[in-house]
Amino acid sequence: MLESVGIPGILVLVWINLLMAILRYFAGPVVHRLSPTGILFASAIVSGLGLYWLSFTETLGMAIVAGTIFAIGICYFWPTMLGVTSERVPKGGALALGLMGGIGMAIVGLGHISDDGKDR
Image (cartoon, rainbow, N blue to C red; front, side, top):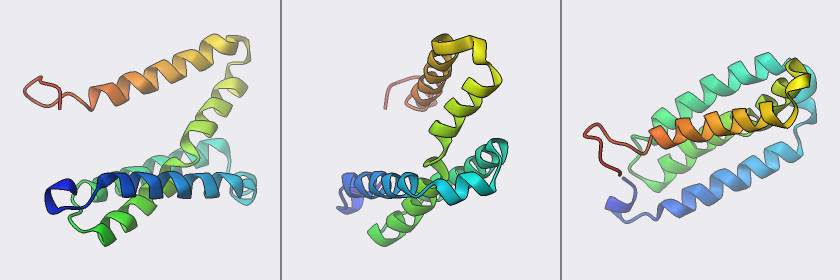
């Protein structure tokens, strides 16, 4: 949608990844205050709101704000999900972690198919 009004979407992607790197670097206080389940729950809600808002943005400013909310939500999702998997299923080892990654990639892949079944 941003490209239709002349805004390169890569700028928002770069901003989201930069913000995620910074937030992960300073993750100590967040991780020590919340339980892993609490982090996953909060991440799911915040990233869902950010993604929903991001889908309706039409200006670069609103895309940056919505991207910031989305980045705050998803920055702890992946590491916490892997940590919870390795703690709760210790005998699963690399297989359990690989399955988590595979399921995550499969879900992301479902988002690339539109209602009429054609690739976007």
